[in-house]
Image (cartoon, rainbow, N blue to C red; front, side, top):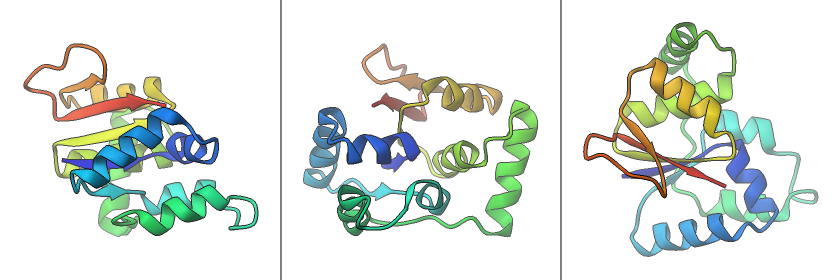
Length: 141
């Protein structure tokens, strides 16, 4: 299991969201890897003076998956089948799909769900009924 934070999760962190704080605390306790895709960093980072909590969060995560040519092609293919253009959301979902199981933490449940449905990936929303076949769990912040 891995936790992947999207831009909404980073904003939630900056706003000291209690749901995100509890999730990150549990992940660290259980040694669950926490990832922030490089595209999410680009979309949210404006410097440590304007985003002190984000700076602290980025200093504590386990990795920043990059968007290279291969992963960019995977994201592009996902965007094509979903008929969307949100590169950051596509990258977050592609990372989750690459090595399930995964948890995506997002404020944008509808777009993430649409991408997962388009890719025919079994998924569930945290707090609801989670089928055993779910490869991705979506947590709303």
